Image 1 (spheres, one colour):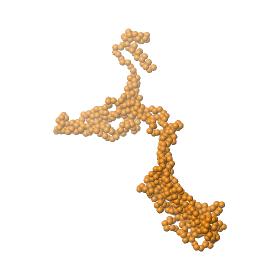
Image 2 (image 1 turned 60 degrees about the horizontal axis):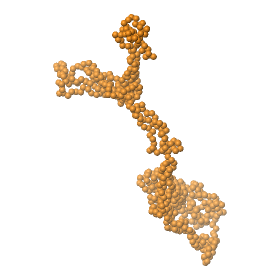
Image 3 (image 1 turned 135 degrees about the vertical axis):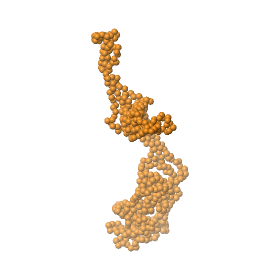
Image 4 (image 1 turned 90 degrees about the vertical axis):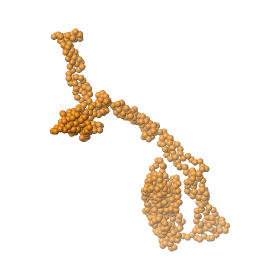
Length: 624
């Protein structure tokens, strides 16, 4: 039969998550939280205190960082990552339990560090963070028992028949359903609330509870035999501080011969106490960590591992100065690695045509990263420094250009006398017209043309007339005024030559003006040459809508758009009349009918008839 956690044969009681023998998981409290404080100073910062008696301890960094978790006892003894020495992941004893220190892979994992322990702890422990970068958050969780709970530690160390929290254990024949254990506990000074109760010496009741059967006392043994230490157990370690216990046997008091233990009083047998042994430190050794992931996913890369000089002492492995391992060859910390052969770049298509018909444009082609199996993979699989260009500039030669003009302004710059009318002129690239256009060249069309609204009346001295209206209804234009040298007389003025007023400062006769933005306007090129010289041809020009900044626009009034094509040379194709070409005979029509015009004599004698029939035949052939 099995033994339950209550030390009774055949009992099915087990310890629940609260550490209670036969408990129902309701007698404990879960303590959890997240440490999210913003820290500024580098170094050790306390996160949380783990009380005595805590179980199911979980301290986990919420995401990977360059910070480290550390653990030490309230007495100041370092358990993990103390004194700025970073321990390797593993199992470390402290506070009466075993802590598992985990540090996920530094390359492939995004998880943070963690401490895990089943507990229960037998002292208060402090968790720290070695702060080196912003705190990602530390989640902590542990379980503490509720009030009036029997410590599983007391159950584990209780002898059969020994009082349990001031109560004798019941014999097997006792009905377990009638158990009524009286607990009498005190809290030690400095013990945190909610920890396991600790039994104080001398606090057991002196009387037997009414519902308990007294424990059967063993028969008194004679004094001819007693307990004697005959040696010690083997030391648990060969170096680095182990432990051993004295061995007691029952012997005859006179002859010192070993006899059966039944001859001695078991209640007087000394309790073996732990003794330290083999206190000298163990030889230092190289502690070899795991290789990191290869630095390259393909091709030749590097991988690293941590090599520490360690030494065992008191069941704890400590990091020591490397000179203590000089008697050993130090393993390599770096190594080359190659996971697979790298993929390569392949040009899958030829260059496309240039993006513009003239001038400088761009062309493209398809470039892919292909694995050694022929599959298209991500570009990161190939060496980006060796990637062929998939786009480049292309020059299609100079573009044809034309002068684009607006219509002449409606207003003359002068209300009287000589003035000017203006228009806008701009040279632009022509991508639309199929006509052979030359470059703009130096023959820029004139932007002004003279105009005259009649003579002006005479004025006085350097007399400046009023400014004319702006030469344009919008945009930049000019204003004119007449400035003359006059002499005032009684009732009228005499106009003088300008040199008569040369000693005076002459007012300006022209200035620029700007009424308002023109917005978009229609511009057009000059008409092309007529496609035919007679009988109706056509000529074309290009028309564009341009903004004030001379960029393409769609804001022009479509009804005002100038014509892009018009007929020309609509007159009939008639030969030039030569006054000397006449018929000298009345019957020249017979010469034509006889087809004698091919002869020089008849062509001269009947010049008009032969010429007329020749032109008729050439026109007929042209229409065919």
